[in-house]
Length: 121
Image: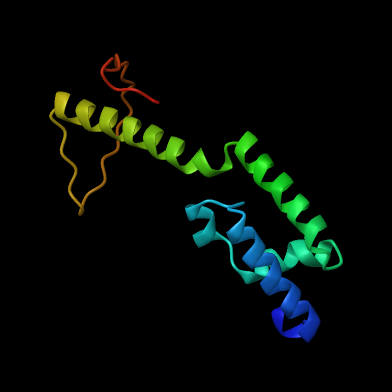
């Protein structure tokens, strides 16, 4: 996509990125996430009008914030760690060990009371 830009469009892309960084519209993590292709899509969608593209980018960033897009992985990781810890404690409680060579198959249903010190948040 970048190779198809005219020299004027390349210049507008550079101005757009400089403005975003100067106005601190994005945070440090977003600086790592977003590249020139990302910014170019905003400019192209607004016919390379920088002000309109900035407005559109701000709306997009607000949507990400409202939908907790940037915290989904953190939340999911906490839940996975909680469940993993719970399963590990259960295996210790039942004195079950699983080696890499063998698979454990069980048809027993266990009812386990979760440790209140563990939290999903």
